[in-house]
Length: 100
Image 1 (tube, rainbow, N blue to C red):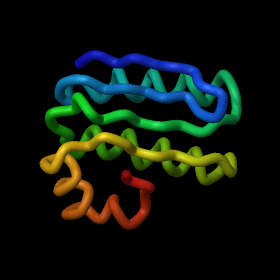
Image 2: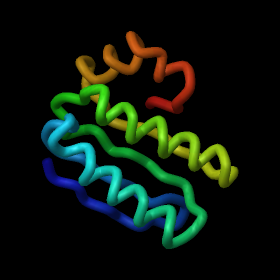
Image 3: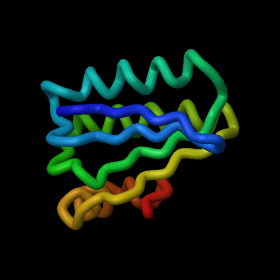
Image 4: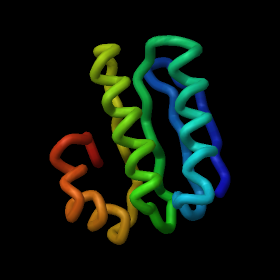
């Protein structure tokens, strides 16, 4: 898995490429943790190149969403393919997260 962080005017975008699973979720968790340490900001997860997400990856996103809610900022997920979107819908994450 490859993670790229881009700092924009209104949000920090975290692009994830590959598979987000038990083996790789700690990488994303570390990246998100660093973002929250730096500043209070909006986060955009760019999943255009994400092939798969497991429950471990979903756990990282849920923790990020809770942190964003506590800070009063915004989190969006963009570019998810149909497989990943289906996982969000089946798990109910599409009801609690902004997925575009």
